[in-house]
Length: 311
Image (tube, rainbow, N blue to C red; front, side, top):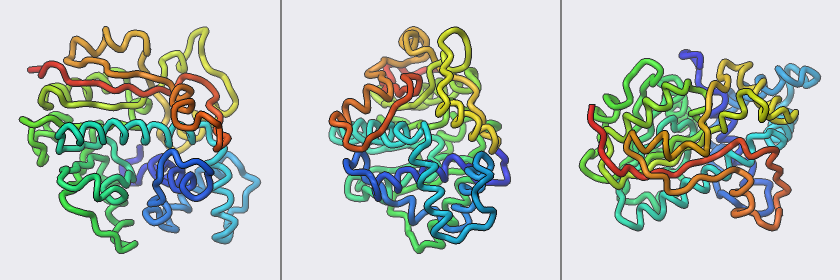
């Protein structure tokens, strides 16, 4: 990501959640905050990202034309179902953890997530720590202030460039209480990082986090990146080209069949792992929203920190 600009994909993700709340029949996730958090100047960035792949769109649209184009493009995007279902899966798991007594929630690569705003009652008594790139974090705070949105307590916004800063050090310097179990969410990030960086992130979490902490992270099946099982659907390739065009290309994934063997040595037990197709059957079994999952390559994993790692 260009360090001088906020993540376009974070903006688009927030708008996808708001679009779902406005237009879909069956609510998988009730999150309308994107319409408040993403101001006109940010929507223009998203529109330009779309127009790069649809040059027939007007260069200077009026507000209504711009909104219709953004809604139509995001609704047709191959990542749209994934954005909704990964958030729902994560917040269901978080809710269960809070019921068990977990009182810390860390979002790595938080983007324009609205949990602390949207579910203030659920988050009461839970320390929320949002970590993201300084440019994205600063722009989110700017957008909140411009919209008159005051973050509830206790929420902490941590700016960190994890491409150049060590996550373990960032976590230890944060308000995180390392002796207590924590719930970590890491959504929509791993595909933009190298395999080494992803493993380093997970290792940093298991080094800092107390045993019985949990981690939910989304990822792409490594088959997406080559070999005989490479996905070649038009919608998926359009998504790949779009994110690459704004400097946020897909880079790597994991092999779902080897997660246990790969993550066990760095301190994790696998609680659950599933594909978008399985999540769609869980959250919209009747197909009320008309969502289509084009493949089973977008996936999510739920882990427990079984043993605290040392360095």
